Length: 560
Image (tube, rainbow, N blue to C red; front, top):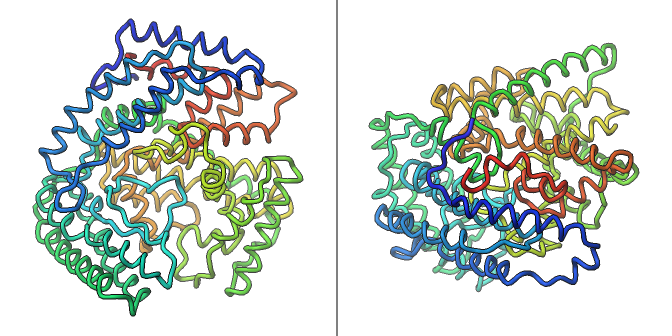
């Protein structure tokens, strides 16, 4: 079911121009690669890249007392100015553009729609206290932070310790944004979303812990950094008290509703589905995962169970052996082009031994068969490619805003798990196949819960309870932090909870289409390499680039 966009960004003339450009690009794509490489980019495409650079500068908020300004008046002005940027984008003539260049135009359009959605619907600065958590100790495994993040995020993982005098001053300067930002938050947080408010208190409390950890890590630093940590911590403690004082007055729902959810899917994340479509797909995947698990258990009847890891030494031995096996498997099976940065990218993220009573869902899996999670670490291969092989397009070179990359990033990581299982990775360890189906069931269950939370049919707790109920073998603990973190993230960022399954579904469909086109010449390695070359962009656009097929995109093109 199509949803009417908040604003129409193209007239009939604009659609006609788009189709003209599409067929012109098809003609260009038929040229030999050597000829195409010699063609200079059209002047109008250069205008797009200039507009993109200017747009990114506009998207960043102005400063208020040294912190990003999210006050109502500033955001109202920005929303009014956004229409001018959209008109500038619509005015660019795409005639003669290649498919790749047209895709870049759509990426810029999606980011502009993302800002519109944030200001008009999501309003994290007004509804979500977690938006004001600024300190990030660890690197995300995705192109950017998962979920709405303020523009003053402090990436502690980018610093080296012991911290140098120059870095002390730089970090102190970043930390000084926290007190004015939290003062401003008391003006901005006018929303009535109870679940977001209550979960956000926990996120802000975590910042107190992270600042304490930082203080211990830089013990003996100069007065500038020491005082900045002290002031940031006190401001955070005071903000927690303010949030807790107002918590009883927060009584409203936190989901955005089906219509706005679908609008965001189609116009921001470029997923040609609706809320109802996603429910149907995730129900099917949940049923398939549970049924497949039972069949695997029947197949493995009589085989010994996998013995869990018992020590740190054993954990490291099995972890490194698992990476050896995975890297050898993808090379011998010609799954993907193996690059020098792939092996170290995995070994840097192996994890550590966790006592049995403290293991969350993913720790349970890695203490049985590490590759059931390490195959999901395709994420780190993605980030290594972003770092070591910058994309030729400046628009695709960095992370797209508003988590627009989620279907590709989370979808590929999830799809690769099952793909490697079917390709034979666990032929010598059949019980591991059971774990992989449990992984899929958990992701389908949490995604379904998040859909019902966004439609306000579930509270966040009910979504979490649903996730626990439908994760096999009781592996999803209701008492460990992972459960609350996941459902909070998916409530904060509509569509993220389903992106693992939906992205996988779209990538499976891409493989189907490519295998039909290529027939006997289809190559799994060429499939993965082609997806990687396209960059971390929505799977719908990857499909367009690799197959030339735009049919599935027609109802989410401008003016449709």
